[in-house]
Amino acid sequence: MVERTPTTILGIESSCDETAAAVVRDGREILSSVIVSQVEAHAVYGGVVPEIAGRSHLDAIGPTVDGALAEAGLALDDLSGLAVTTRPGLVGSLLVGTSYAKGLAYSRGLPLVGVHHIEAHVYAAAMDLATPPWPCLALVVSGGHTALYRADSPLSLTPLAATLDDAAGEAFDKVAWMLGTSYPGGPSIARLAREGDASAIQFPRYRPKGGGVGFSFSGLKTAVLYHLRGGDALAPTPAPEEIGNRADVAASFEQAVVDALVDNTLRAAQAENLDNILVAGGVAANRRLRQVLGERAGGQGRRTHFPPPEYCTDNAVMIAGLGHHLLAAGQLADLELDVRPN
Image (cartoon, rainbow, N blue to C red; front, side, top):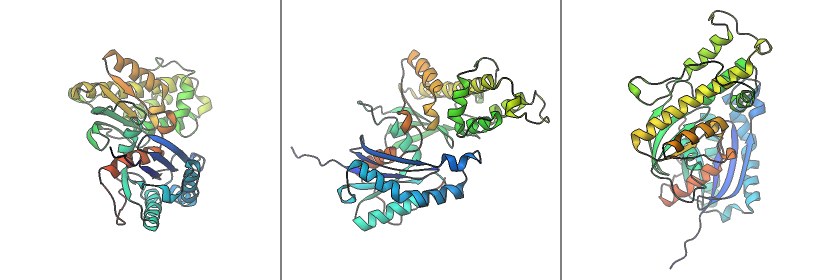
């Protein structure tokens, strides 16, 4: 038997506001992971400012890649290839990572693969599973994306449904701003919600007509705003310190988001006859979502799989991991590789 040579991939991620690099062997073994966050730079604005993000990536990309290689105890010449996020994301941010990766690939003669950020998030939820989950249902839920996919392999995702407006993570950020909690909104709302009553306020849950599958969070966000204004759309929004039931609002809002995500995910799993459910993206770290989906899916005989919390948000481990499969499939990129923000 001929021994197979392990593949060691350096992944680079710069699609939004984290500069990340990681080294992964054979798509599963994590040798290093370095993430430089820009949260403090964007917090004052309550969201990501594209120009600030791009400039921050320029400053951080070199040291981040060097740090990942050092943590893995490897040099560029020890690598089997490079993987870089090319879509979707902020165009300026994507260009920084992709340009850097192309430069490394050209200078060292390394094969290069371009990675779809959403496909990588889905793969992150499967990396530590001893038995491959395919085919399965994948829920990707983050600040920029809320969508369901049928995943027949790491490289085969079929879209099933997506949000009509706000992503769930975006709704968390906007409600956090209303309640005066910190950015990013997901973790801060979750912390406040632990002190509140999730049944105190009956916020609406979107459900598509005809019993289909889909998401919408703009109506929920507006319902929170109207509640804070006492039901008067023209009234001023109260200052956070004037809101007497902030924890109840946070808990009730969080529960409404979780119910919408869980209901639609389980309907899609039933429609597609899939017993494995992968959940990925930043909101996948939400403990309430993990608990409710796990319990309800388990009651139907379905299994849920979440990445470790540190790999729910943007990271390069998922890029390098999926890069292994792209390299094995021969889906190589050349130096004409370009980014696609949408």
